Image (cartoon, rainbow, N blue to C red):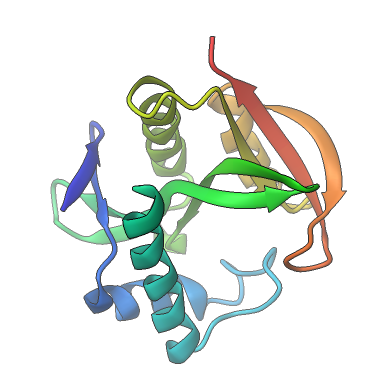
Amino acid sequence: MNVLETKRMFLRQLTRDDVDNLLGIFSDFIAMQYYPNTKSREETEEWICRNLESYQKYGIGLWAAILKDSNEFAGQCGLVVQHVDGKTEIEIGYLFLRKYWGQGLAKEAALACRNYGFTSLNFTRLISLINPNNIPSRRVAEKIGMTLEKEVKWEKTGNIQCVYAIARM
């Protein structure tokens, strides 16, 4: 089911058939260098199940980014419920196959998610959690209007993360 559309992509709900698509990212040591580790097939299946549960519970989650011109899986982007510093936040998350880096797809998808979160879902604030060393991801957050708010030790990983945030105007 398509959730959003951008100029070059459809964002649709992940399905159990997306395991191999996601493994193209999750098994890539370079794409996952700012994450705690790569993911196995089983962990990728669990990732999809968590997103399916999130769709049911919250109506949001990470969505598959599908290129319109080729119908190819390019990555994932979406809105995710996170718990940061004892607060519930909505995160714009994005991660793309390395062959699509540098083409503006992450920015395009993240901008669509930002707009959807503010206009259709009426969120008043959105964040992105980013490893401080992940300069390209930080640039995407900045390009969609987010600013660095603080650094936190994130409960899920114990690692320091930059919290980029934007409030609805």
